[in-house]
Length: 297
Image (cartoon, rainbow, N blue to C red; front, side):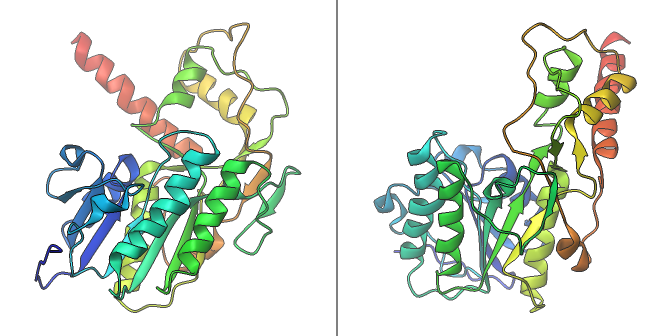
């Protein structure tokens, strides 16, 4: 028998309650009955109703889903970074969840996607109306997942995130500081969003859905300043002591060179806490330096 919870607050399922999903769940728990689904329910954040299930195994969902769901936020990450891993996460997992939901009617299904669906490599601006024709098989599976959401029979919104960074995603910053990042000049354009803004954007759009405000079917979620990668590296080197680049330092990512336009998201009224890379990385640097001072005090 499915879980039955009757509560005056709306019900939200975070399908894939990992790093980003957990942050979204935590931001929503004060205003909704939030359920977090992941393989290991012990890792669901405190205060969230944990559901242990594997979306690639439909039988594991039997009797697990609450009846009182108003929205679903689908936020899976692949268990393996190949075509099959992406298909399981973005297509098969969503199809299994939709089947398990049965005839429940959602106010909104949110599908967490990626700007990697854009293959543009010519420094051009991309937005929700731009062609999404990923060259990589993994990107093609993400795009197939988007289509699965849009054809689900539920009102659906796709949120395409650019590179997420923040206190729990420090790899780039650490690579620069340790001399393991040394991009060519001029480097391709890069796009990013702080993890706090990523979670806040999803929560904000979910709130609009609950308030019966009109939502588009797709939003690009990236901060307000696309920037060439070498400019970011140079800026970090001016803020904090960094090691000289090592011989095999990484030259950059594989995301092409495009500039993500977030105007549609801004037009909803959403505001960024970290509108550009300087604000976000400055906060991370300050936090690290404060922690070092505390340890040496």
